[in-house]
Image 1 (cartoon, rainbow, N blue to C red):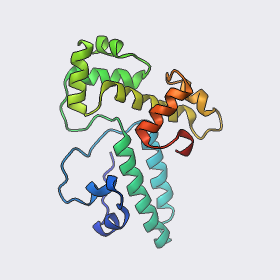
Image 2 (image 1 turned 45 degrees about the vertical axis):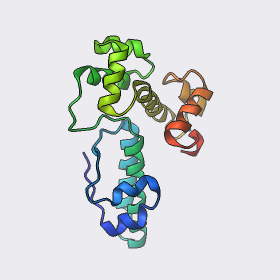
Image 3 (image 1 turned 90 degrees about the vertical axis):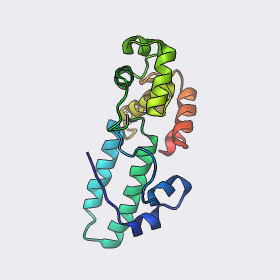
Length: 187
């Protein structure tokens, strides 16, 4: 678990777009503690390690802190992680675990594993996590894509997109663009 505290001056100077305004609030509404997937956590850990290497260069270190803040906030917003400290129905936990293990499962298979009807599970999942079951599945697929793709030296975007169960590159591209706001090649 990471807890990072940024000085208000840095937050005000860095959090300029609409998506970051909540960071400037003293007591924002909502849940802000999530379990990140393996790939986003690894990206942030690498970024933090690189930042530690710049501590002897204050201007670069300060700029890096701003970048770390924005990167961590972006990962939090894009993460399909279950919110910590929030009790969820056991079937929602089972469904999330099943989709983390295999994002290619269809909603019916997930519902069977969770022990509820697809409609009841979909309702509970949306209510308790804020994400539809399908969006959660897509986010898990994207997470698996980034693990498969890595730095792009071993696999093409298409190969890495097909492995986590996207039916075609076009489907993967649409989902990636919708959930992240950018093309897969633009990271």
